[in-house]
Image (cartoon, rainbow, N blue to C red; front, side, top):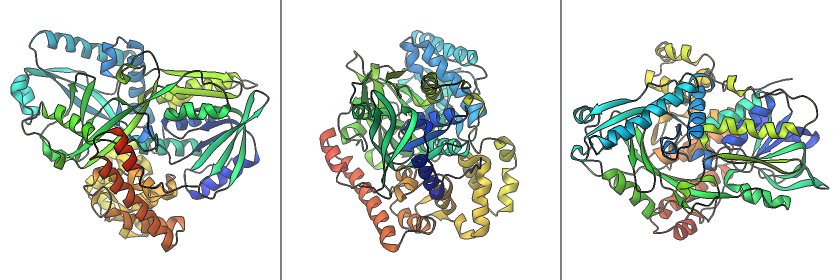
Length: 568
């Protein structure tokens, strides 16, 4: 079997041809974190696998999370110890084995407002958090620590110290969620999965009561075709109910969409050596270090409107600013906000009226022969969700199929990462790059950074940063298309990089340069190149305008005024 570690346009075309011509054992519908995880799980068991995504990899929920790999401190209060332990075990695996280049420890402060009772209560929770992480194996992060008011003052000078009596610090981990998903899809492809984005499933093929495949629509070319599979896995997140309706059967469970928004603020707006975890009346609020920025989030509200483009409102933004300002000496204003993004959590619908109280557990259903449904869960436990979904699919296959092996399978770029990190200064010097630039590349691509350096060797201009987005170099745009499955300008600026939320102009000045680079790789003519830029600029304008609206309905209407890049 020939294997390629690229996930580019040629590999996409070859995957579609293969899916049209031959039945696969497992077909996964949905290219978010769970779908791509399921594809890797299935293909590394020796099964033939296809995976289809209607838009871009991670374009839904999986690119709009808090970017945390965490056990979930708040689930301890709900006494959901099993979920916390499972998530902490996965956190350790991601940090140590699966993706040490993409998943990094991050330190948080929990400010204390009451002297004795709160310290005892929260401290007991943090101790339990540490114990549960050790029960799952090596945690990969230091344990919690108690701090006095003076120690907090030194570490977080910008806090309003009249509002606290001390603090407790603990560690979790963070990840570039969208880049992780693209790397996961690429790794699945490397092991033999046939992966294609921008292919929409528009119906299921049934023989009697049994699902035997799907009707697919290639949105890039307009072609419609069938894919046959022994088992289909529905991993469509907040679209689960919509996908189930195509089968003509009532779903075994319902998924409720909960909107969470995040603000991106420059790192220099307040001084702190660590992130913050703050309690609100409804949930918790994180202030997360993110390169040269802070991420502040999140909200937790029902969403019943367009699932592809959830919109943040002025009220959402004000809610977050109000809560973070309650602990800062110098308050943040709307002018301090560089970027805003909104995502939808796929929560299993239950009795609770509040989405923050709904279960983060996942469920697997097999109510229709030939179709497995996986829903619920959280980003951190994607590997367990994927394993459970494929276990259910395998139960219906003939013959003996090996158990899941993904505990031991690193993503492409992970192997040898620590050795490469130790040589980063020498590598940077050899390519006339700053060491900080080399660290940025290694923390995004791991040992596959060599492939970007090869691009720079061929064309030294690719080492130049993108206008208005100094953190990213031009080689990353080319690489996104040739190796990471990007087919459009938006894919690059919103997901392969995070320019759309990190740059003050949200990528407006980078767009023409990036489009020119993509045109060379993807064969665009001038009209197509200009259309990609114009569509992206419309997206930025509509998002900015939607964020001034007072309510969800108004924000949704304004956001949808910008057309999608693919409208077939």
